[in-house]
Amino acid sequence: MKYDEALAKYEPVLGIETHIELGTASKMFCGCPTGFGAEPNTQVCPVCLGLPGALPVTNHAAIEGIIKIGLALNCEIVEWCRFARKNYFYPDMPKNFQISQYDEPLCVNGFLEVEAEGETYRIEIERVHMEEDTGKSLHVGGATGRIQGADHSLVDYNRAGIPLVEIVTKPIPATGEKAPLVARAYATELRELVRSLGVSDVRMEEGSMRCDVNVSLMPRGAAEWGTRTETKNVNSLRSVERAVRSEIERQAGVLSGGGRIVQETRHFHEDTGRTTSGRSKEEAQDYRYFPEPDLVPMAPSREWVAELKASLPELPAARRRRVQAEWALSDLELRDVVNAGAVELIEATVAAGADAGAARKWWMNELSRRATEQGVELDALPITPEQVARIQAMVAAGELNDKLARQVFEGVLAGEGAPDEVVAARGLKVVSDEGELSSIIDRVIADNAAVADKVRSGKVAAAGALVGAVMKATRGQADAGRARELILEKLGAS
Amino acid sequence: MSAITRDEVAHLARLSRLALGDDELDHLAAQLDQIISAVARVQEVAAEDIPPTSHALPLTNVYRADEVRPSLAPEQALAGAPAAEEQRFRVPRILGEEA
Ligand SMILES: [Zn+2]
Image (tube, rainbow over the protein chains, first blue to last red):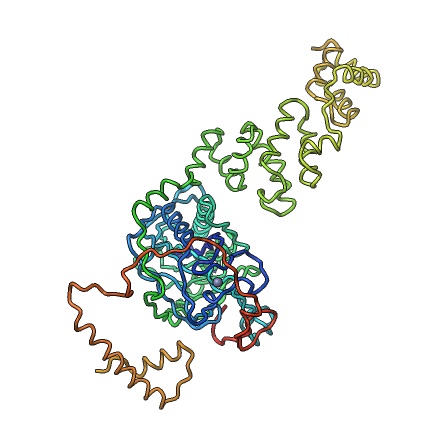
C-alpha cells in the first residue's frame, strides 16, 4: 500500500533496540583484543571460546562505559543487578549461551529528546543493559551468503565476547507520518550522544552500532496497539528510515486486505529497501534465562556513579545550543551544520584560531563539496581543523585570497603536504608588492584603452573587466580588492 | 501432578537440539520430574526472611582492568574443532534459523 494511504488509515507505534559495541581494549569477560578486521580466530581464548573450566571476569571499563551511556540517557543506575545467561542453540556463540542481562538491567527509565522536521520528540528509554557480542558466520554454498541454501557455515569468534550495550526504547506512539524520520532522528542522536562520550566509535558500516526496529500499526483512533514485527539487519541511518517506511506500507497492505500481522523477526534488504520474513518470534523467545553463576552481582556505588556523572562531557544537544548562540546561526543554518557532521570540526577550527564565520564557510562550502564528490563523510577528508585554521590565517593576513586558498585546500587534500608546504611548492602567494601590481595595472590599462576610457568617463562598473584582466595576468595571485582600488585611482575615478 | 510434563521435556529437548526418541522421553520425563520435585523441597525451608540466593559467595563488584592478554594462536583455537576451513570453525548448516 502507498505510504500516504497507509498513514491515512493507520497509526504506527515504533520501538527501537540498538546494540552498541564498546571501544574497550579488551573483551567483556577476557583479555582478548577487540580490533576490527583481524584475521579470523586470532582474538580468541578459552573464556570467549567457552572451553571447559574457563571463567569470565567482568571488564571494569565496559561497566564504566555503559553507566556513562545510561547517565547521558537520563537513566537511573540501579543499586544492584546481575548478569543472566541467555540460552540458545546457534553456533554464533560457542558456549551455547550469551551472557546478558534479563530482568535486572543496569540502567532503567531514561529518555532522549530528538528533533524531526523542527518538532521535538521525547523518546522514553526502557532499559540499557550489558551483554557480549556474538561471533560472525559465513554461509558457504548458498547463492548470496545467506543461510538459505547454504551447505555449511564457517564461524569466526573474534567478535564473540566484545562488550555490547543494548538500548531499548519504550513504545513510541503518536509520530504519525513522521515515524520513519523520528526513528532516524533517534538513531542519529543516539549515535552522536555515544560518540561524544568516547565509549564507542559507533560505526554502523562496521557494525559497532546496529538497530532493530519494531513497528506495529493500529487503525486511526483505536486504543489498542497492533501486533509488532522486529526488523533486523538495519545498518545505516538511512536504512532505519527506509525500514520503518517499508514495514508501515507492508503491514497496511496486509491489514487492509483483511489479513493479520504475524509477530516475527524480519530482515531488511539494503538493495530493495524491503523486509522479508525471518524466524517466528514466539519460538525464539524461549531462552531459559537464569542468573549467571560465574559472575557475582554488580552494585555500583553511588559515589562512583556520581563521579561518572560529573565526568560526562558536554552532550550534543547542549553543545548545539551553545554553538548556535556563539556562532549566531539560524535554526536552519544550525541544522545544516549538524547534518553535515561539521559541529566538532568547526569548533576545533575555531579553537585553532580561525573565526567562526570563516571556519563554517570552509567546512560547509569548499570541504563539504569535496567530501560529497568523494563520497565520504566530512571528517574522513585528509585535512585537519588546524590546517583549515592555518589556511584561513593566511587569508586573514592577505597572503592568500579565496581563490588561492581553494588551491591550497586542493593540494592538502591531494596529499601534497601541510598548507605552508603547498603554498611554497605551488608558488601560491598574493601579489602584494605594490610596485609590481602597479606596473601590471599600467600595462592592462594600456592594453584596454577603450575600457579605461569608459571608467575615466565615470562608468565605474566597467572597471570589473580591468580587474579581471589583472587577475588573469597574475594567475589569480593579486589581491582583487587592492587591484580595483589602484585601477580606480589611476583612472581618476575613485 | 507432575512437576514437569512430557511435552515440556520434549520442548526443552528441541530447544537443545537433542533428538530424543519416545522411549527416551518417557524415561527422562519421569527422571526429571523426580529431580525437580526433590530440589523443590528446598523451597519448603525458605521463610519470608530468607532472600532468594543465586550465588554462594557474598561478593559483589569483582572486576578486571581493561588490559589485553595474549590470545590463543588460531591453530590452538581450532585444535578441538570437529572441522575447520579458512581458519574458521566449520559447522553444519542450521535449518530454519537466520543468521
Ligand atoms: Zn577471549
